[in-house]
Structures are given as structure tokens and as C-alpha cells.
Length: 94
Image (cartoon, rainbow, N blue to C red):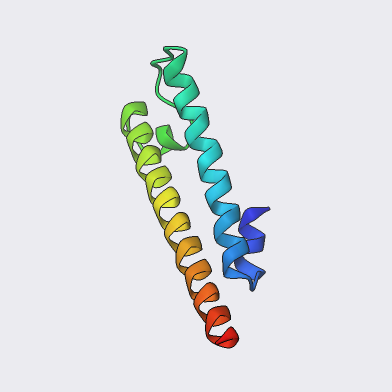
């Protein structure tokens, strides 16, 4: 659903906040797994990692990197868009 909004949406702030929310939820999930001392690699890709002939640990590291990219990118884009919007609003007031 978020992917469809990203493809067809026009509001960059809303889109980046949606991605940031999803990525934050994934981060909370992974932190929760660490908290309960769950050490098995995340099976986020399902059987796709076995089709690619990569280990579960490598797939887990790749997915952690993708999560970091989503978190950093979405928060940076949301912050930039909100900053630009506030600057343009301030310019209109002056």
C-alpha cells in the first residue's frame, strides 16, 4: 500500500512520513527481537534468500542495511521538505 502511494502520490512530506513510520515500526520489531534475546536471523525475505543462494545471516545483514537506508532517507527527506515548506511560509509572512 505504501508503495502505491509512493508511486502515485504528490505530497513528498506525506510520502516520506509514511515510509519513516513503516521503517520505524520495523526498527521497533527488530529491537523487540533483540530484547527477548531472539538470535535467529530475521527471515524477512522468506524463501527468496535460498533462491539467491545466500545465507540467512547475510540476508539479515542486507535487510538491516535496507532498514537503515529507509530510516535515514525518509527522515532526511521529511525534514528537508518540512524545512523548505516552513521557509516558504515564513517568506510569505514577511
